[in-house]
Each structure stands twice: as structure tokens, then as C-alpha cells.
Image 1 (cartoon, rainbow, N blue to C red):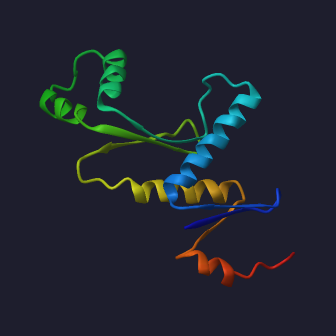
Image 2 (cartoon, rainbow, N blue to C red):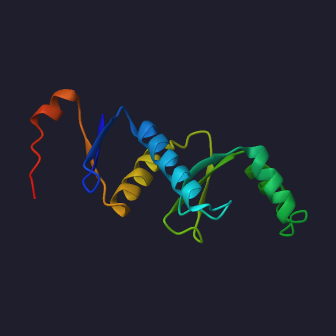
Length: 140
């Protein structure tokens, strides 16, 4: 269980897991860009899984047949879905092939942690709801 505290807005929200927190962050980012009227502008915070087919389409659109002569490796790499991660700087995305044994959950947790720190949000992991009763919040 996760407790997200936004002190400037005097709000606190509970989430079951990082997937729920991520869905909340993604929704907030979408609303923020909609209010600003930005249309398909590069976003500063992205954590998205692209299907193998989408990546093949991108690759085919951007490149001619493999120029490096290493066609077997390129065909194998195309079979994987790809995780795109942008953490504040849209000019430096990270692309990670999602091979069959890659656990993306720790990457999502790390991304959420970075997002919260960058936006001055306090994130507290609770083992269970009884921890919330024990939590002491200091007033400034």
C-alpha cells in the first residue's frame, strides 16, 4: 500500500501498488498537457510499453534494411516489446527491450519514485493500513 502526500495542495491518496500510482500519475500528466493545449508535444514523463509490432513499424519507417549486415540480430530484437522511459527530459528517452525474463515492476517503481521527488510529493510505503494509524505527521 502506498500513501502519496501532496503538501502544497493539502491532499493525501492511498494506492494499492505502484501500478495504481502510475495510472494516477499518467492521468495527471494527461490532464496537465490538455490544459496547456499541447498537441503531441514530447512529454517529460513517460513510462509506456510499445508492442513489438509498433516498434517494427517505427523501425521500418526510420531505416532502410539493416545497414550493419547483422540481420539475424536485428530480426531477433524485433520480436521483443520495448519499454520507453522518460524521466523529466524528453530529449533523453531510455528504450529497454522487454525480453521474456525482464521484470518491469522495479523499473516502474523507480520511475514513480523519481516522479514524486521531482514534483515534491511525499511517497510512503505502508505494509498494511494499520501502519497508517502509527504514522506521525509533523506540522511545519
